[in-house]
Length: 208
Image 1: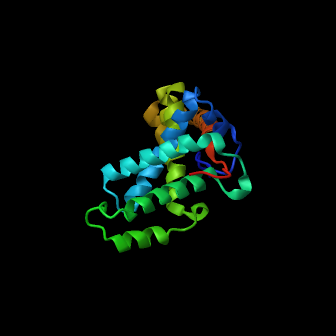
Image 2: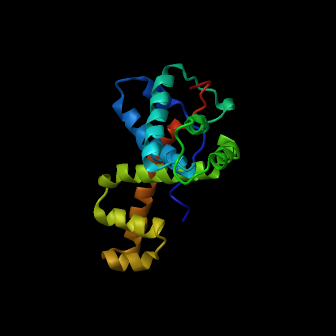
Image 3: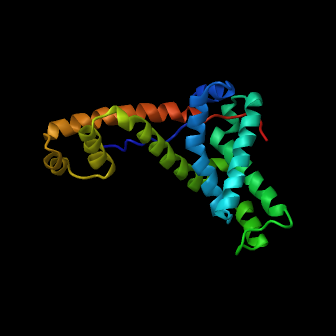
């Protein structure tokens, strides 16, 4: 069976438009759930202590909120994730440029070299891998309550953990056919939720 976790691709600007609506709390919750862990992990990779990484993450989110009214959809200029990674790197550069704020145990030169040697946003494997992982996690968390425990366990055991269908069928007291049906239903719903959430992958014209 193919992975239930499709590779993200540039998509529609619906989430960006929804984020511009200050009353659309669900859109902002989607954005925060997806991207907060990505920015935080990027800060940790750069050598920040967790408390500083959290501060930078919040600063990046505030910057995004301020920039939303002026962001335009231009796919040719790159993805929303690429722009967000650039914003994050800029904040890291500013952080390490301050004379009195350096992470413990990390030399200033080494940190600047780390940032300078990072690949372009559109070719950053760690950032993209983190996003794919988080996209799957958030989508799975959102849809799990829609299914009975047996259906969810049938999907998770066979599609995610890769266990044999016959083995899982015996464990759950279901027929092999029921396992396939449950897996198909959950996978279809998961793909739909991933597509909905991945509407965030946009190309802004400019930002902070």
